Amino acid sequence: MKKISNTLQQIRHFTIGEMMMVVALFMIILALITAAWQSSGQETRLHNAAKLVSQQLEMTRIKAISERKEIGLHFNLENGKRTHYAMAVCEYGQKDKLLPGEDWETLPRGVVFTTQKPGSSAEAVQWPAAAKRGVIFRGDGSLSADSPSELDVFYLAPGDQATGMVDGNKPYYKIVFNKFTGRITLTYHEE
Image 1 (cartoon, one colour):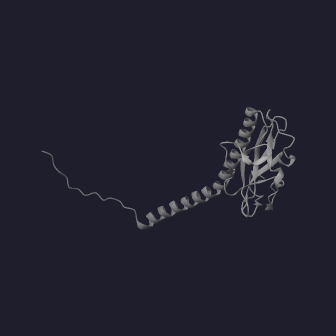
Image 2: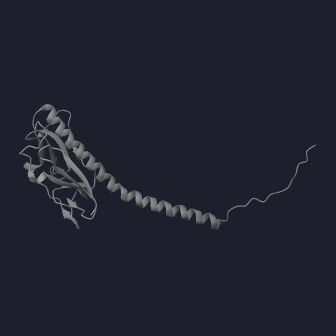
Image 3: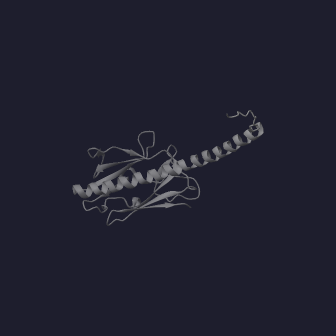
């Protein structure tokens, strides 16, 4: 017959001080993660805006080639009292006549267009006059001579869309057009 042993074992518990140290350590780690996550949000929005603009430009170029006519991507920066950073695929010379199935695509909050290279301080957005706010692709995919030369190179940078100020101390994307092929080069800069 088996004997049942009634020996008591002492179970070691953590003291309140030890538990408070663990909780404090978790809070410090959580604070570091939160700070890193919040700062990466701006870079993520900038990256998404660059992808959006790149895709819109490429889609406009492809539509011009497939339809064998001049099609443009119009950039709208104002609408009444409020400034909008948006773009839409339009028929040549008709910024208000969107192609069927197209709609205005807006940039994510905190990202602006500018034709002036972001500098070391905050500066106002530079953009062509209202009549020259579009990139026009010919039926062969190249840039039309009617495309404003001011838009041969432009930038996507972090900035305040309400005030139109560019934050020059943050990374930005540079978009450069090849006038002959219509292709774009998108580069990321940290300066």
